[in-house]
Image 1 (cartoon, rainbow, N blue to C red):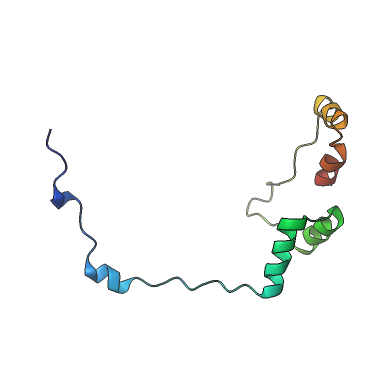
Image 2 (image 1 turned 60 degrees about the vertical axis):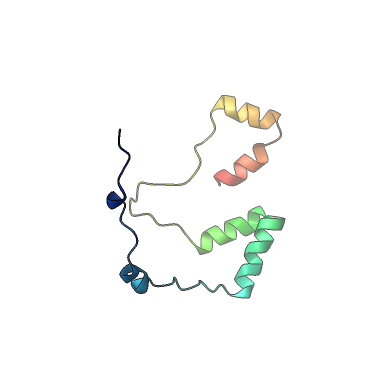
Length: 94
């Protein structure tokens, strides 16, 4: 069959190009940048993480919604315990 004709694919017009606005770059303070960098490279302690969570509580439009992980059932609890991961799981559930 015949392929798509050139008329069906409009070329970007020069008029559109003249209207486009460059996005303003986001400027992040150096101390914020360094804090993020440290979190990515060194991690965040459980205490630090909890302190940050208390300072910046999450709010959702749907008040019923929560980001908390589900509680472990008996099977998953035993698996986490056997693998020595229970401390990490419990820290994330508090």
